[in-house]
Structures are given as C-alpha cells and as structure tokens.
Length: 78
Image (cartoon, rainbow, N blue to C red; front, side, top):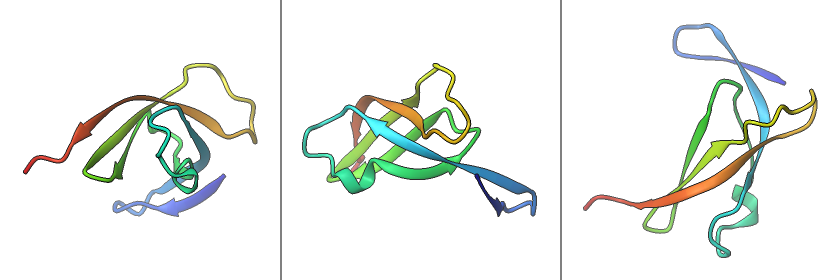
C-alpha cells in the first residue's frame, strides 16, 4: 500500500487494482493501476468515451490486487 498526500494534506492509501471485462480492444496496460483504497468506481478515458468499472464486492486478502469489473461505457459529450 502506498501513501500519497491529497489536497487536504491527509494521506491517501493507494492499493493495486485490476480491471476485468470490457471491450476486447481495451489495452492491457490500462488494466493494472493504483487507486485510492476507498474508490468503489473507476472511470477510464478510452478512445472517444469512458470505460466504467465497479469494485468487486468479494473480500480481497491483503496484498492481493482488488478486482474492478466492467459495467459499461459512456461517450464523451460534444
């Protein structure tokens, strides 16, 4: 777990996350990332929209990446 300061100078704990599901063309290098431990949803910019992922409710053992599952896609408003 990594600690980084947020805008209020309080440390934010980052955890390893794995993004599962979604379009086949979603790049592998975007599927592993660090996110704040409190994030339930992740929105990733991709092509002309965003891929949306939600945290898998299954408990994860310490030291194992948290799984976020794809829930859908939205387009960028023009």
